[in-house]
Image (cartoon, rainbow, N blue to C red; front, side):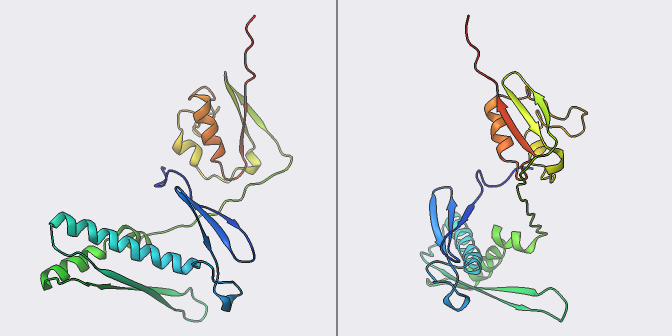
Length: 216
């Protein structure tokens, strides 16, 4: 398992419903509309979702247009959604995407670009089999098992483990649940092991670096 993004999108709560979202190159504020008790000082979560569809569609279309060498300097996209739910059932969601060509295009180009728009990566993600997993880091006293290595000792708290599978799928030279001694602390350099341990979302993994050796 490898995440598509080099670093996760991180959010922290601020005043009332405002949240600070950090991405790879900066940060921005999100908020809720006034009718829901917010100040409307930033886009709400559903606006962000619709903007993902809109921006992904525009980028996908632009890439295809440029590849074909077509003279279509501008286009626009409008995205909205609606939901319908029967009593006792989960809502069914329909996202409508309106592509507007603000430059002249032929009917053949329109047909092809409509097909291309439907294949933008965010659309395909939303239409695929999506699972959202939630992990919460646990704290407190619990059983610890230590795996001591030359440069780093990895600590495992089995009662905290929520089986996110990040460790063994992302650093199999160190973590292998099929083995009796499932953590090999000398299987990678200490820096890489520390990086992977810090990615554990449940608090089940920790580490201690070895004391620097003092020359005689």
